[in-house]
Length: 131
Image 1: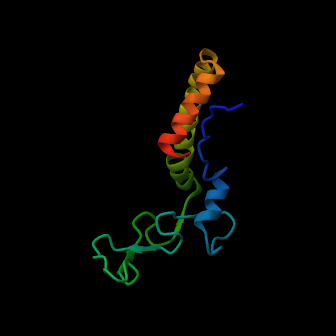
Image 2: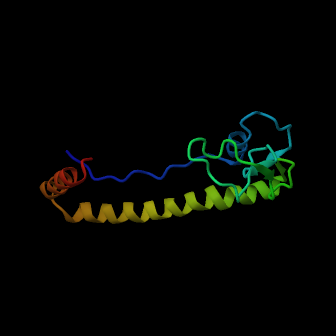
């Protein structure tokens, strides 16, 4: 029996602590310190006005002090939490709401269609999109 189903949204980090660990790749932070995700704890970012080298890219570009952390490479927990909420948590919650709406719609469609009609739709989808 073939089934219609949707892929669940991907969640990058389960919580703020996983995001902290991900942004502190070199394990430079002490307990209670929070990383600046803009510069990855280095305190410096690539100069926004730097020209990209065609062969080397931005590898040799000038670096400037990170404006987000003023060169410390650290943020407060409150600031990091706000960044995490805006960039990951809120987006994931919105994607989950959309996924639940689509799941409900799909369930409604399944109830209205016969199994043979569902199989024809799935085969047509595979032929068209190669999934």
